[in-house]
Amino acid sequence: MNVPVLDCSGLVRRFGGRAVVDGVSLSVAPGETYGLLGPNGAGKTTTIRMVCGLLRPDAGTVHVAGRPVTTAAGPAKRLIGFVPQDVALYPDLSVRENLRFFGRLYRLPRRVRERRVDEVLDLVELRERAGDRVDSLSGGMRRRLNIGAGLVHAPTLLVLDEPTVGVDPQSRHAIMESVTRFGQQGMAVLYTTHYMEEAERLCDRVGIIDRGRLVVEGAPRELVSLVAERDRVRLTAVGDLAAYTEACRAFARVGGVARTGERGEVVELVVEDARSLLPGLIALAHDNGVDIRGVEIDEPDLETVFLHLTGTALRE
Ligand SMILES: Nc1ncnc2c1ncn2[C@@H]1O[C@H](COP(=O)(O)OP(=O)(O)OP(=O)(O)O)[C@@H](O)[C@H]1O
Image (cartoon, rainbow, N blue to C red; front, side, top):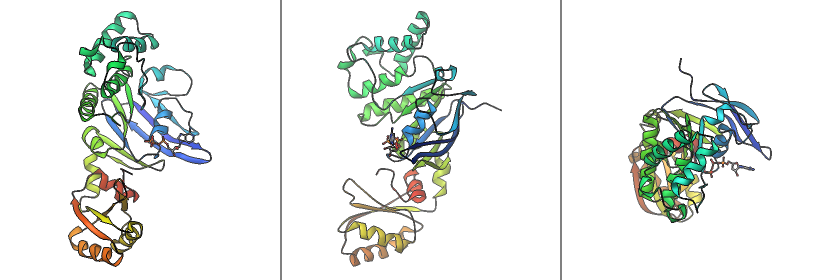
């Protein structure tokens, strides 16, 4: 049997008496891209800090290629490339100099280091900017270089924490393309995101995390098939939507009801037959003094899975 590149078992971490990660077990195979998907505060960053040996778990174990990961330095840590959410680069050094610096941190011999720097420049599509200072790069390019810094020592497992938050669409596309290539080259990738469309497109397997627990795990298509017979209804409305949301929950007899939208102006529900329920939902709005401004019915996707299982929306 193949040893998984990453194997976490029963990870627990408490802060102030609250279990922020509460018994997370997951594994990632060679060449597999695994997406840890969950809303802000679900425990994604805390989980991957334990995976990378940056934070000590209160319980549970982490192994990379069969070797235990601890917060002390050890052989397993060399196998991990960690790309943090915040860019950690030297702004007054060039792109190439930054990559060389990270190569030196891992004590790569000079010739290996130079070769890897060239390879990484291609992988993150920054070869043309190799001689430019970091402070002259766009935000998206810095993000790509940040990923490159995690790749110089040719890790077996690459861990990326929300790599596309706040980047322009072009860089987002470039980052997603490169993650696909890493998988094709046999690297195992653990990727956290709260963008379900990214997880659906990039990941071979997805684990949905909510309040520190993995609520479901599987290939995106498998997960979507869990709710295949259901529709996601989005009602854009004006009025007392807190009361209306509760009324919808009781009327449709489902747990998957949430308020979303930037100003909480949308009520989303996962229901079995949207068409037959819609007249009732609209009548209920009227009874609650709520004005419906728009109705959309979507095909099931990972967002639907999440709403159905947790009763909260991923984008909150
Ligand atoms: N060092 C800490 N001390 C106290 N609480 C913490 C600490 N680190 C994280 N938390 C809390 O743990 C919870 C989970 O945080 P975590 O960063 O793991 O979530 P996340 O899913 O990565 O979300 P985000 O996308 O916002 O980073 C949050 O409520 C956070 O406030």
